[in-house]
Image (cartoon, rainbow, N blue to C red; front, side, top):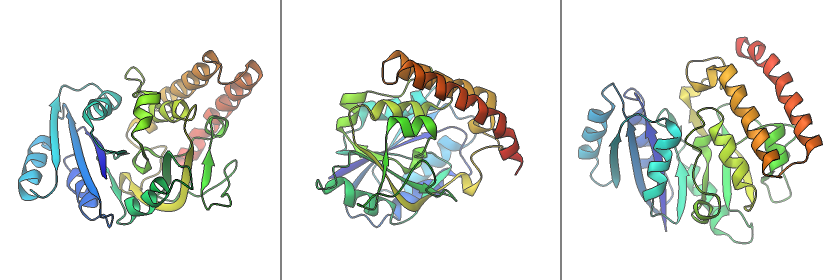
Length: 263
């Protein structure tokens, strides 16, 4: 049983070693296929990655260098060549806690749980409305819940290979809320859950809004969210009334986000 780990890298010289160490320190006893996509980094990321590979020959790291095309294109490059039975996503400034893979795989391999896709909590995230812990100890994820409030930070996700076949790849034209878009598309034909345990440290523990990086650009993030809502309506996943509700609800959250960023 093999898990393909897809890691897009862009100017991550200060964090990529810690990121890769977190894979090396996993308690899961299966195999990893580690695919690192250096997406046109202008810092020493490429050199650091080459040195790391030489120092850790036991780790099956495949390094791909390409011109900068954005995180979705980089992830897709890895997804297209991944050979694993399961796919895990990991961003270059994030870290997995040691038992992350082992705990999630227990649910993926046990068919009694009927889990195709599983995420976890990260940083200081908690399970909150509209999500709730079910009788199986997991938090169910659905399209309407995702439209109300997105959950499942990218580096927490592991899913079955069949999702590549029934859902496809990330939208390379979308630079903001692209992970939410993928989760929503996955939800159409797959069972999705969140394991309510903190298993990932993202961005060295920083908040998701108000800091440097894509999530700090709130205006563009809102455009991405609105694009997701429209796409779900266009594809008849939600009706007109639902579309109008989520459209207005997202606009109201957009007004509040700058206040949250300052807290």
